[in-house]
Length: 134
Image (cartoon, rainbow, N blue to C red):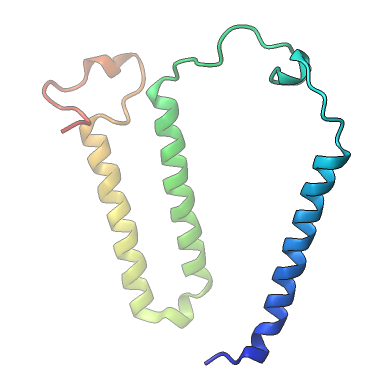
């Protein structure tokens, strides 16, 4: 059980952090210029004045690539962590990582069977009656 004396450094650190953040926010509020104009309200992108709407439709493959990257990036982090401690984890760790990889592989096979990996020109000619919405 944690004693109150052990929490003093955490409490002191938290109070100092809150004071510093509040001080910086107040300084920005009171020391800032406070004026605004139309140019300050424009989005800034490398000095180029925006033209047109930023609401552009993005194709689904870009979203899928991002999701696949996140899934396999997290998978890689778990596998590297397991690989570092594989001697300490023993057979139980091997069984757990095997189940983890098999679950991810099953998900990848399911997406593949549903046509989620077909992005090219032939994507419109997918299997009849098969969709990702099923």
